[in-house]
Amino acid sequence: MQEEKCCVVSSDKPLDENYWNQQYMANATGWDLGEVAPATKEYIDALPSKDIHILIPGCGNAHEAVYLLKQGFTNVTVIDIAPVLVNKLKQKFSGAKGITIIHGDFFTHSKKYDLIFEQTFFCALPPFMRQQYVFQMHFLLKTGGILAGLLFDRDFEVGPPFGGSQPEYENLFRGSFIFRQFSECQNSIEKRFGSELFVEFEKKEEHTAQLFAISGISCGNCSTTITEKILRLDGVGNCSISTNFKELLLVSKQKIPLEALKHLLSYDKEYQIELIK
Ligand SMILES: C[S@@+](CC[C@H](N)C(=O)[O-])C[C@H]1O[C@@H](n2cnc3c(N)ncnc32)[C@H](O)[C@@H]1O
Image 1 (cartoon, rainbow, N blue to C red):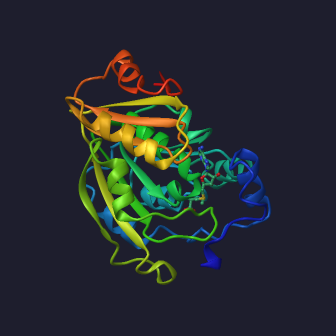
Image 2: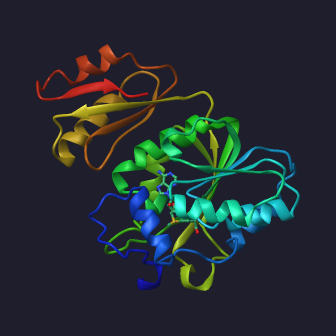
């Protein structure tokens, strides 16, 4: 779907601050709906409290924040990595109460939230970052906190945006989140109709998430063998390995000691594992 494209530079370049800045400078913002998505608007309208702490990561023009403030929400934080965009946001929201605007990297942010909105942020990240995304969402949410919004339910030939499917998301989020809503969005805008899922995921408090750096794994079969072995460990709720085989997300009832994982992987001397966070 060409109109979703945002690239003015090749997508094999790192999708970093510079990349996103260029998109904003070139007004190449094909992802921008120009308003809050109808499903998210409906979700906001049903929220019982206006005082909850809300985060919008990779906020872009932050249409959700505009709507939230209009509705009287008092604790909205938006964060984006592109300084050109963030400067524009600071002007746009100048003098507004109830909003904190952060220029920064979502993956190093550390405040805690009741609710985090997803709107074409997940799909903007290289797919190998998906384990990091799940870990960080789990980390940033308070007890009972919610991740809500839209995820693509389709593939793209090249990204960003990078697509996905319900089974894929299930494999990623299972264990660390309870799926309160997870189905085809019924009120997508026309060009996205039938190609997105509305999700409402609640942080699963009884499970702790750990992110490990791994090396020595070079194919999908080895990756599957390792995750199957780890899934058999007592108390493990989920385990997944990033598409570049560099990170392993482990969700379990109690933290799994690094030594136990090293031992489990010792059948191949190439395999190494270290705790990231
Ligand atoms: C496809 S755009 C979506 C923008 C907005 N959510 C929307 O739907 O209009 C992705 C946004 O994520 C931002 N972004 C990418 N990586 C980020 C990161 N690590 N931390 C914070 N923002 C990031 C980009 O600057 C860009 O504004």
